[in-house]
Length: 251
Image (cartoon, rainbow, N blue to C red; front, side):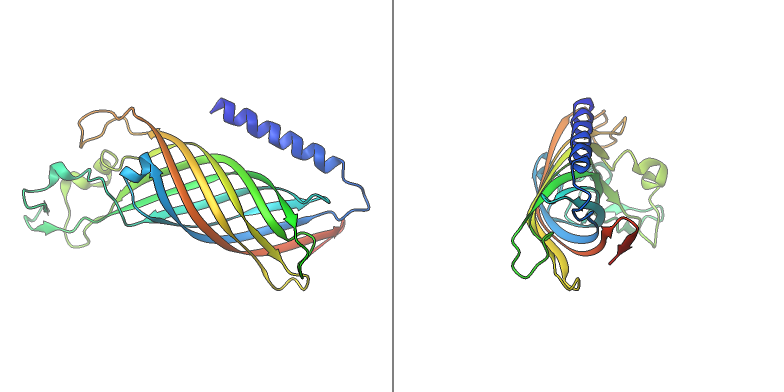
């Protein structure tokens, strides 16, 4: 974690230095407010726990200078309904059912939930084919935190005493840790400012571990170091705010 923070500080210092070298006669830059959606395939240790998931989120970027450097923040909400591990196995009958307090079968679905939040730095390589000079192929690298867990949903008709809010934490396998992110895609910013979007491939590497002190299913603490990988496609809509003059910001 300390090494990751040190690298992040170096990136920020480098970005500030580059920004200071921009001439006063050059465009000040553009603020990119983005709203994104995508799908991901898990790999590494994450593949053992979850199947395909979806992401929804956004972020804010600052793109500036003749070389189109980009610095920003990024956040994603991770969700899915394919859970491969069954932490509730010890609560099930031989037939695979969970019995509620009224001695009837309870419907307890499990879902994947999580998020990623981090800082990004990169560059846009213009194509200038009917687009503005700030559009083109985009390459981003990021560092942040990845978190995921198994969400255990309640049966709306009946309760299960072993799965009250107090005890769910012993089954949800909450995990988080430092994560790296890479994005390779295309950024479109039309000259008439009406068609602004992004689309590309995204990769994540999370170095996570369990954050629960005790796992009820295994009757022990999970101290395993995880390498959680995600490979996906991400598309989004961009709302740009141009700052061509120091005193004016418009879109």
